[in-house]
Image (cartoon, rainbow, N blue to C red):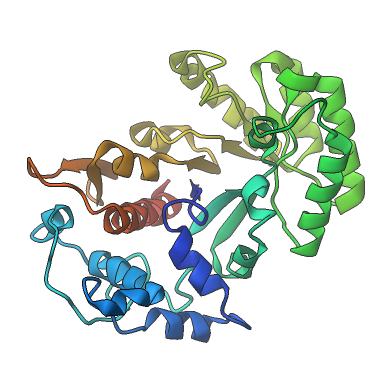
Length: 328
């Protein structure tokens, strides 16, 4: 099972990935070179070296142990000089460096940040969401031209040779017939099959037709609770088994109830849960013995270092992804 970190590039680590992606002719060697920047003391004038400052934050966390975990909550730790993403890091030890990372990103954000696409070939797997709902919630007056949106989405897919991407599952906005028309247009423009997304309104028979026509399908409405979560979870085995009987892969959109993942056997899921630690003021710690993600709260009266903790939490979720890919 692949666990995709949604917003893994454009989220809290935006600055680091952006600096890396702007390297010309990005290769594995260049990634390694960029990551091997000596770290700087962020409290000195060297802080102007933003790449170095971010590198310090990342490297300080990649080999975090239980003994120094709480230092992430302490201001003014001693400056260190080390290398970034070295081979002692469990999640990043592969020579390809980024090959253990699975990323899901939204076209809505990437369309104006195309430099990030330099990174995509180096990730283990990449999924592109249409970003249609985010686009709809933006500052748009009047009717949205969805045909134009699909045309631009398709051009982006073609330009960067995106292999896995979702349809515009905007059933609640335009109805299923319009979704199908836009999907067909997307297929014609890209000459590829998108991942259709099943929603409650489509019904059982529609899912059966999806697995007859597409090699990869998805279950949506989990985050928005179209059904109560307990109802969804009771239905998951039927969805998954039905897809697998047809040799079709199935993705659980926004589903990462970690304790349940081993029993459902999705081919892939995605989540923004790695970001929740920063919002809630706690750190994640992956436990390889239980396969679970533990939450650790910092000492009272200490603030959490936002950037450093984001990197730590990201790395712990990468470790979870490696575990899931191996055992689930």
